[in-house]
Length: 95
Image 1: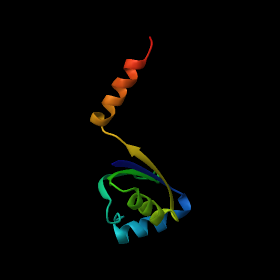
Image 2: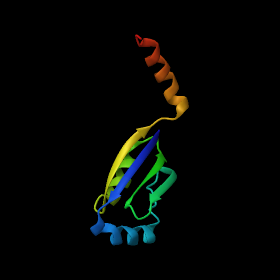
Image 3: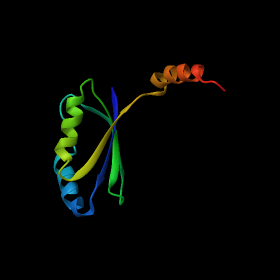
Image 4: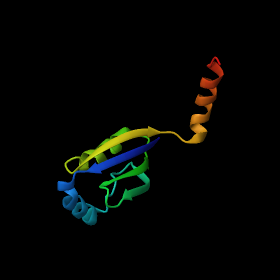
């Protein structure tokens, strides 16, 4: 399953977050494959798209950083996964 993980860093945690990222590279725990990570430089926020069959590594990664930033986790679906649900919903609509 795919997850969108969004984070925001409080200004007072900026230097500590940068130092930890420089030291660890923001490595994800075993069982979580990071497909991409994007940073809004100067905005103290960013997001990653990660994949795992187990929610535990996702939650572990957020816990590992929760002392420095707020993180939100959203399950995500591809267009191909979403299309059948949308088509079923559209077919039930009364217009």
